[in-house]
Image (tube, rainbow, N blue to C red):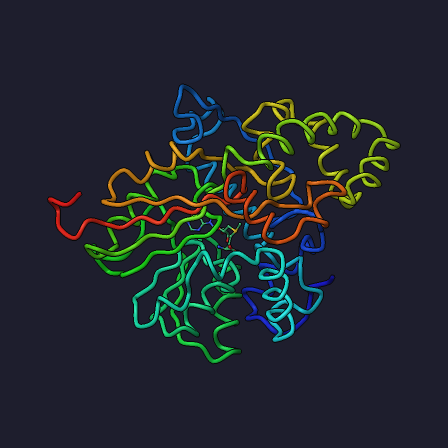
Length: 357
Ligand SMILES: C[S@@+](CC[C@H](N)C(=O)[O-])C[C@H]1O[C@@H](n2cnc3c(N)ncnc32)[C@H](O)[C@@H]1O
């Protein structure tokens, strides 16, 4: 899919998106290809909450790599075979999203946001944001990248939806205290170097009694415990040979170019197989510099400043359940996902008064 000269986006966004043509990779929830290395490790029992970074990298350079990755690979663009920024593009992105992740409308409860001041942290293409706006919320979307903000803004303009957008960092929100009734963040905060700082900011900008809805990747999920930690870790060794790449492609349906990206990483990045690095590279594309997973206990720890916290898991990610996956009826899939789902949703309420926390 060539993005050059498609004529829908502003010149800035065209420049941002056009040269790389990296959106066409399939088989990953988001992102695509890009070469880069990272060096960080996770100490102690709080693995995943407080990563310690290697000598070679501090949080700000890691943040820069996170920004560069998502700037080049705006989340979800590869699922639409239409010019980015066109009406058809957004329709296809939305269709794909709610077909594959059909739990989102139920989990996000868009309709309940009527008349609420909603902030979305990491708005991506604005697909969920549009549902909040349609439901009558006063919507604000922020994202670390110009690419996402341009595309989300364009979506709202095309579909005549009210909303405001700005480029901002979740870890340092430029809003006054108590500005929002609801803060929503889907699949974002496990990609930022200081997740705890971002959650602290969410708490700060919520009014007393306000709610946070945050989805993070789930450590105790089928996808992490079985697929990533066992199947993919074993299977990746086959990628050292051309026939191995073809075999894995045949067995899993994962595109060969994506597998070759992994093969390159395996060959050139000495840390590719360390467990944090392997996780990052095996969630949103081989070039993704950072992804983490959280257990229920770790999520509770992250949201400890909130007065009330409820956790739910969704999304089995059936792509990784060979043969059986497509045969699972929805009710069974929901049951399994409620225990071993890949998406851990936190519903947190800020105390109504200081004393309530
Ligand atoms: C996997 S995408 C998710 C986008 C959208 N929420 C969705 O569900 O489709 C991750 C997004 O988080 C954004 N992001 C990562 N770190 C961020 C940060 N520190 N502040 C704001 N946005 C961030 C990225 O730019 C990217 O658009």
